[in-house]
Amino acid sequence: HEIASHGYSKSHPDLREMSSSDVREEVVPAKEILEDIIDDEITGYRAPAFAMNETVLSVVRDAGFGYDSSLVPSRQIPGFYGNPDAPKHPFEATEWYGVEGISEFPISVAPVIGLPVSGAWMRLLGRRYALWGLSKAMDRHPVATTYVHPWEFIDVPHFDEIPRRIPWRTGEYMRDAFERIVSRYSEQIGPMSAVIRGYES
Image (cartoon, rainbow, N blue to C red; front, side):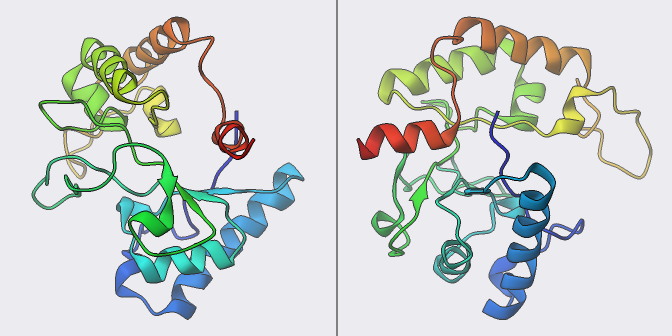
């Protein structure tokens, strides 16, 4: 496994609406805390709600991160995220954001339907979708990027205060989905840092 950072605040703020100094207060403390806990360097970052732009990415880079994974090249999802014109494979951030010195690992998107192959989409659209989507994404490029929230591996109870999509198919269903992914791609799964080293060598 590779530990990366998802920010400091529990509130998932939209970093694009914040000043550079405020963004830094969300980025730097989280990195320092994680590095203190694991006694190793944190090089990866993903913004809350995938809220990324040139200003935020510059702060992330200056904080010492080597890669970001906050770009979702999916169809535009109302009230959510998605940028169908974005690159669908790992690239140097100068290509999209104009920011040098940091790599971008976009979340993999299933072709044709144009939806992410990760997190809630795996739960909503099912295990077959996840395996098919990753396979098709890897047909286009050898590096596929997916994610899951740790809480998705436990049985989340339903509360009226949270949307029904949050607890849907959490726990055993999601654990089984990732076991199938790991089983199918056991020879190809690895941390982002290994991929970056492969590109650099």
